[in-house]
Image 1 (cartoon, helix red, strand yellow):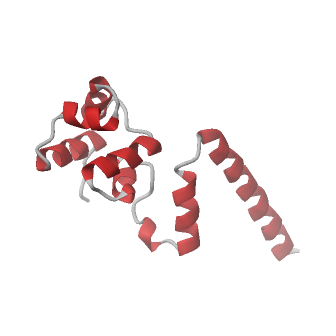
Image 2 (cartoon, helix red, strand yellow):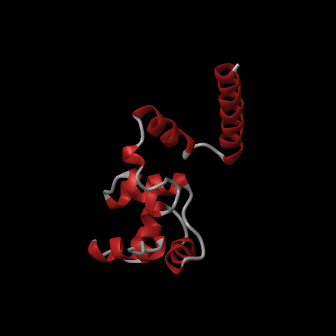
Length: 118
């Protein structure tokens, strides 16, 4: 089984390919050098909103950056289109809103399941 690189190793390799420094990325993202350094050292991963900005700055797909940061499950392309659409929306929402949607989805699932088994 192949081991996937950490976000830090992944973003570092993206910077090397583009001959960019951590400071260059921080400046273009309008964030601190310590934030980018923390990502590369593995102390944190960027938020979905930051992933969107990283994708724009580095010319990458948002999906690739989100997946590298662990915000989206790998293999999402195999999911039905409507499920992918919901996942794309969910990763951009604040945690509280995501929790509300998950709670509603569970309720709706249980309701449909109970009607099906009745």
